[in-house]
Image 1 (cartoon, one colour):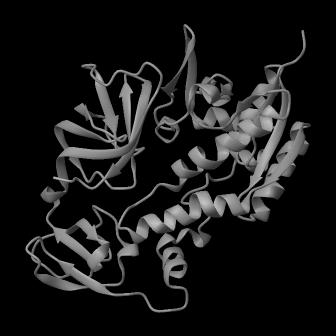
Image 2 (cartoon, rainbow, N blue to C red):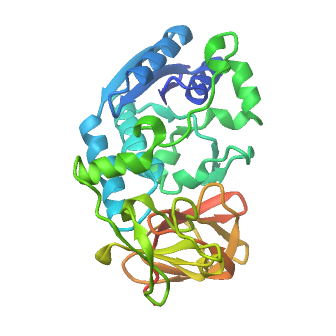
Length: 349
């Protein structure tokens, strides 16, 4: 019996390295692939070192132009429209899994694997995506869009670990300096993790930003802001508004360069509109156990779904949801199973 070949997305970080190591221990022929998305020499060096220590073949796929077009530019355009797009979701959907699958197709239609925390199970002839049993690390929210072609050949080796400490321990002897390191935080392609500065430079370059008005729900001017790209729904910091009551951002209107402020209670919504609805094979959104999340770390909410035309839907929430943010994903679950999801948009009514 020939050894099964698997292509592992290898970033050189703790999770991807532990995934490759786990697959080697399970007897797979592992090939590491590192995507050069934004010219990070640190990433390429770390991945190369990990592959060397693991004793596996290593390939670098240069995709800076595609990453710019598919991830960075939509991220910038979303903020210009008053949205808060999620670049990790864009990257997974438009880049990582497509490139992994294409590379695997060129290598005997191999299996693929990543260091995400999630699970894939086969039920009958279908493959189901499940939230990880490690709830503190679950990343299924970012993967709701994966189709049967990907799920049928996808491995999540970290699913066998129940804590991040266990993941660190598995590579401690192999790469002690990596196992003791910190996890990456923030958006990977933004220098110094300052996304407001990144957006300012991307939108305005060396020119000054376009200031606009803070207003209340009646349109009364409360102050001046530095540009809508620096704000998202629910934000309370950096407003510079002196009021007797605590104010939060409840709306962003790019057409008039306006940021609307109100009290916390105005953030809670009983209806959420989504577009680009994607459902997994056989998914039923009418089940009584249906729940949804509007961000990775957010609560599970309950609601009924009204499907509309053109991939749109309205979620009628059983309990008010705080700050469902345009540009972010809303993901449906039934227990641990991911049913699908869509992208939150502004309510039309």
